[in-house]
Length: 120
View (tube, rainbow, N blue to C red):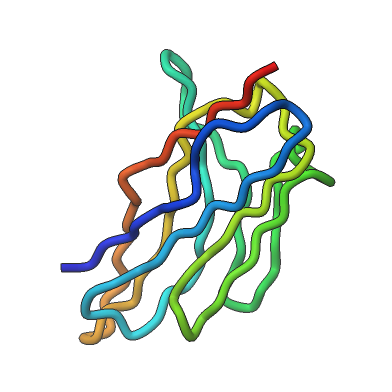
């Protein structure tokens, strides 16, 4: 079974930092694009940052200059370094990956979500 598991969330004061990690496991050849989305209760899920297999990155305007996405292909892991956190960054963060299975199928996979709470 292919899955993505997030870690690193929690409670932090405004202005602080957190680092989220998301590791892919299962019968995986590699992971193509990966990214982070977030969702506040009652609102649509929004893209926060994404990174391609070639390490090209893109960010939501609201997090540019504060968040950095990176990946370790050997570990099939994507990271989100979040600095200068604001109360409005409070959300459930979801990892996303376009997984290439051992039989060469492309499979979009989501993590279960992890809560980030920023206190003001």
